[in-house]
Amino acid sequence: MHAYNRLPSSGHSSPSTPSSPRSRSPRLRSSSNSGGGGGGSGGGRVKPSARFTSGQQPPRTLANRITGAILSVLVRRQGIFLFAPLLYIAGILFYMGTVPFDVVPIIRHRPAPGSVYRSPQLYDKLRPEMNSDNSTADAISTIWKNSYRGGEWRPCINKSSGEIPESNGYLYIEANGGLNQQRTSICNAVAVAGFLNATLVIPHFHFHSIWRDPSKFGEIYDEDFFVKTLANDVRVVNKIPDYVMQRFDYNMSNVYNFKIKAWSSISYYRDTVHPKLLEEKLIRISPFANRLSFDAPPAVQRLRCLANYEALRFSNPILSLGETLVSRMKERSANNSGKYISVHLRYEEDMVAFSCCMYDGGEEEKRDMDAARERGWKGKFTKPGRVIRPGAIRINGKCPLTPLEVGLMLRGMGFDKVTSIYLASGKIYDSERHMKPLLEMFPLLQTKEMLASPEELGPFQNYSSRMAAIDYTVCLHSEVFVTTQGGNFPHFLLGHRRYLYGGHSRTIRPDKRKLALLYDNPNIGWKSFKRQMLSIRAHSDSKGIEIKRPNDSIYSFPCPDCMCRSNRTEDSRSSSVT
Image (tube, rainbow, N blue to C red):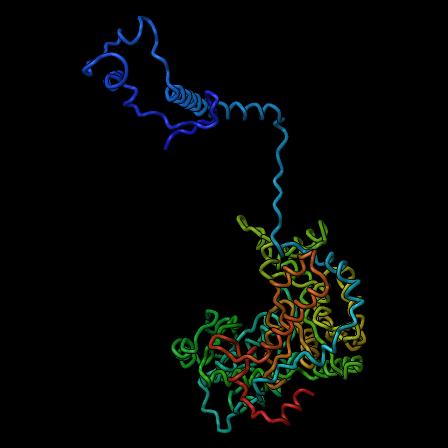
């Protein structure tokens, strides 16, 4: 490959191929010239003095001139390459001399899609078209149109009819957490007691710093009904006999306490706990929430099913008020044949603080959340090296939905202004501001505080677990249950509603990662938004009936451990839909 001459020489616009180096040798030139032209017979050598006069330069050919020009350019280009670093450094120094050192350039990074809370702006944009949309079908009646294609299921928990063998000793457990975490403890304790052939002492509830509810078992659940339902499977007593406690000086701290790992297998109880039970005749397990694996033998699962779906019934005061509120919701839903939606909204101050998400409350919100985190989890969120990324939390679908976001989602799913909604929740953070858009979208919305009189609610007001039990009852009997954040409350309702509604949960579980992207999109229109919401609704419908896999919980997936498949007939299908 030959060098390319960018600068034309000798009047030519393109370079010619340089001559061979051999043709430039004086010796070869003289020998080649001897064969041609003019004087000299016989091909003799011509002397230079005979060809050129003294001091005269030989004439330069066109090829010589072109070659010289090319070499000249190459030399000049090499010079440029040699001096290029110096020129570059000089340019940088010149530029720095023109910029003051106290000015620092600001680099702005565009936030990742879905990482910013822009729902209020989206609501302002979509509201006019949403309010003028008259195409909404009767969503509350058509939402479960695909729910029975796989056939129905029915409860089928077998109860024992024979006598229980002599007890191996007493099992005392301490349940921790809120209402439904305690429920897990109770059901698991029944299963373990039955497996070990132990007598179960009515579980003791820990007083939790967050829920702050001192309620005892009998103040939340019907204790007599619980004991009676389990009578043929597990012995249950409300007190340890004196002759047993005498061995421990009537002090529970002297009783051997097992510290069991979460999700321990049933074989651990057989190999480790059972021998100690036979030796001591009284053992204690504290804490006991989630201390038994979901993957257990059928006999153990049957006892869990029996405890959760049959034996645990709320106490009469809770059950009575809960059923009263269900009746009032049905009266207010007369335009929808008595059908209403229940929504579990987790937007209390402690929930928002624990999530570490950022909304649109500015400095005031930051101060409130910092104070709430310090009150509830001293130092947990301010440990050295801990990095909190609110944007990443939102993208991953971990941020609690705001009342506004729940309203937008439900309107997009086809529920209109005349839909009755029961809102199950604690005290909403900054409720006056956050509840306003939800009430604009659903003016028929009710809470237990709105449905019940102060006198009716008074006995339960300062007990978070009892208040949660009232919410649980009203949500259980709604046509549609909407969960917005996860946790034990919706997981238990998911399974309990399957148990009541032929194996179908009738529950909307939104894809919050997808919602984060949609709520952060300023360009989306109402029709496109509505199409996306209907897709989320259809996905929840198709997932209504699901079979339990090995590591799933029977509290969310009662099929097939707690339920059996029914024969599908035209009569049963038609009665299910109505």
